[in-house]
Amino acid sequence: MIIQIQIVLYKNALLDVRRALLAIADSVLPDQTTIVISIGDNSCDSNYHLKIEDVIGEFSHRLNIKLFPSEVNLGHGQMHNKLYENCEKEIDLLLIVNPDGYIAPHSISIMLEKFENPNVAAVEARQLPFEHPKMFNLITGETSWCSGACVLLRASVFKDLNGFDPRFFLHGDDVDLSWRIRNLGYELNYQPRAVFYHSKDIALNGYPEQSETEKFYGPLGALLIAHKFGLKKGLRLMSDDLMRSTEPLHKAILREFELLTQHSQCIKVSNAIPEYHHPWKFSENRY
Amino acid sequence: MTENIVSVVTRLGAEGFPDIYDLQYCLNGQNDSNFEWIVLVRPSAHEKIDEIRQEFQRTSDLYRRVRILKVDSDSRGGILNIALNDCEGSMIVVLDDDDIPLTNFIETINHFAKIYSCNSILRTLTFSQETHRLQGMAGNHQISYSKGIEAWPREFNLLSHIVQNQTPCMSLSFPVKKIKEYNVEWDSTLLAVEDWDFLMRAAENISVESISKVTSLYRRANGSYRSQKNTARNDWKESEQIVREKISNLTLKLKVGDLIENQYLGPNSLKTNENNLPQYYRSLIRVILPIANKFPRLYVILRKCHNKIVSRMKWIVS
Picture 1 (cartoon, each protein chain N blue to C red):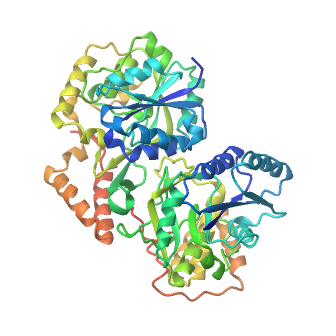
Picture 2 (cartoon, chains in turn cyan, brown):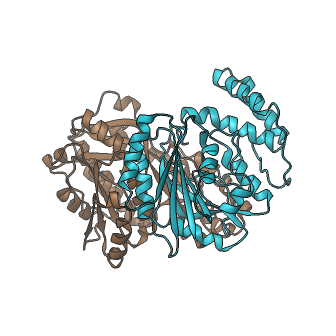
Picture 3 (cartoon, rainbow over the protein chains, first blue to last red):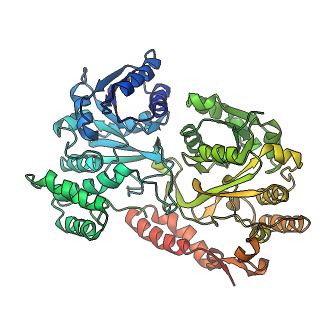
């Protein structure tokens, strides 16, 4: 079995990249499993690129790593698509991981167990130190979407769907992909025994601190999903929220949304797939 | 002794599995690696010592900073003194095996230790998090059922601490040199609340600095904190009483404003809403939640109702 691990960088701290690679090197894998690593560098910065090459060089004796620079910042999903297109071997599974975290030693093996079920197309690991609140079936682990921070995907399904939708620059592309996977009849799974450490600090409101890019691309992603899956009520409520706001950032989000959706139409999916219980949320949450 | 290295100390017993591995991953994920981790393996976990070593080796970068010590005593405070005498850091902090330090945990302690020249006790913020321990597919791991809840005061108030401990142990890092200078040790005879006793005796001579940064989560699995669940109610009460008597013999220097900001007038005036919840409700919820586990949607509804009740938990004066 061949697993391609994909990581997309945008000027991430070298220490983080080193830790992410070390964790892959330290991973406990089942026999007959081959790992290839494909890293996309969106920094468009030749100095940074050289430094990343040095970090990769430290692992040359333990890991098979390919590095792809880009002349423009392609964003998260489009760079992952490019990495997948560039894979040299016929891969079975695709592991997408964020560079601001690392995968725990047994996690790949634990996630692999779920693929014994041919109907499972994606498996997500539990995040530490702050677990994602979305609901999952407490007995089977079935869930409505998988976070792109750490998800193991069936490569054939990723290929059938043409990967991520490139209109999502940073956030929301994982929900979109998840719902399109379910639309093909596959299941998504949450595996609490597998762990992905995702660097997070917590604000005084008790929720993870949001980065500046999250504040822009998070709401934009939510609007795009609502538009794409024809969730008219959700789209109206979210747009109203942003229009009422006096923050210039929110006006900019609406302008970008208009631009991206000028000529696009809704896609047809089963009514049961979009789970929109509350504007800004893509699933029923545990709290 | 090296300046500004944090010594993290963890007591590990048989009940600490598999949570200890979550703690391992959280320490391996720190954005400041300037720390050592001393793991005190209590008698109940001695048979697992090979497994622990093997698993820790799998986070190879962290493993270089780990010391695993097999201890023969089960005294909660007594074994911490072994670490205090053996540690190489300038600050010492105790993390229980089910605690969750956030990414900034070590960085924040190191940063402020430098500012206060390792002469003060540092108190960062710990938020409480409701969790549920799931058997079966979750492998007995804790699943979160709430955001971080601010359950303890942001500012340290020495006078308030005379009545009851208001600081979980992972919020506190102690300056090792000062602790040794004043001969403060953990009380090996206490069956519970040894952290409160240690804090108060240390605070007799060393100032406590409050830092408004959240650095850890204290998980409340199935409605109770582990330390409270594993200690008999009478032992807990008895230990609290002993500590109160010890505190009455201390000479405590208050900071300007401590008296004004103190809300509590005496032990009998201190209550929490949670303690005010009827006993039948607390028993009922402990029975119902595990059963409802089998019905995911029902479970979520029950959990949300319970969280609403618990989230109203605030310190009040009657």
